[in-house]
Image 1 (cartoon, rainbow, N blue to C red):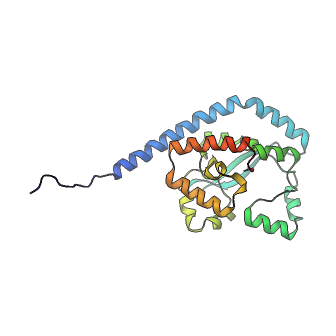
Image 2: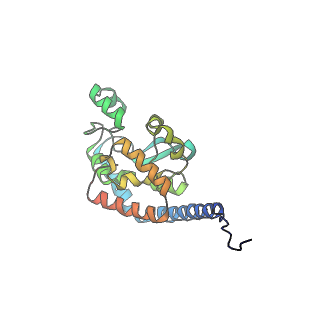
Image 3: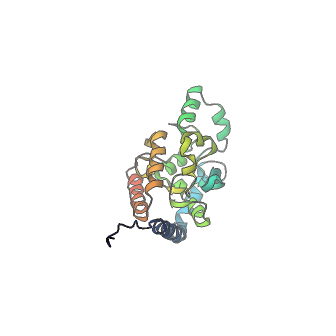
Length: 220
C-alpha cells in the first residue's frame, strides 16, 4: 500500500473560523470607527442641525423603517433632506414621476428635497446619523444598503442572500457609481460583495466611497 495517499483536507472548519474571525474583527472596527466618528464629527452635527433648522420647517432628524439582517425591521437615521409635507408633494407627482420612482426608488430633480437637503445628499452628509445605527449593531460601516419592503421584489431569488448580512453605511455599489447605477447593476454589485466580502475589500470600498463623494459621482 502506498504511503503517499491524497487525503482531502478538511477545509470546512478553516472556512468557518475565517468567517468568524472576519465577523468579530468587522464588528470591532464598526464600534471603534462609529465612536470615533461621532466624537470627531460632533461639531459638524451641530452646524448641520442649525443649518437645517434655518433652511426649512420640520425636525432635523428623520428615521425610516428599513429591512436589516434576517429581514428584521430597523430604524435608519438621517438628517432630514425633504420638506415637512413630502408625502403631500409625492401625491401630487405626475404619472411620469411616479413611474420613474417606482422603477428606481429615486427621482431626478425631486421637488420634495430642500436646498440644504440637496447639498446633504450630494455630499452624503445626510447619512452621518447612521453612525448611531452602526454603534447599536443595526448596521455596519460596509455592507449592502438597507432596503424597504417594496424593494424585495427587485432582488428576487437573491433576497435571502441579501438578508444574510448586516446592511451598511456604504457598500460596493456606492463605491462604484453610487446613484448613477441602475437597480439591476446594484443587485449584482450587492451579490458580488456578499460572495467576496473581506476586511481588505471593506477597506477598498471605504476609500473608493470617499473618492466618489469628493468627485461628486452621483448621490446615494
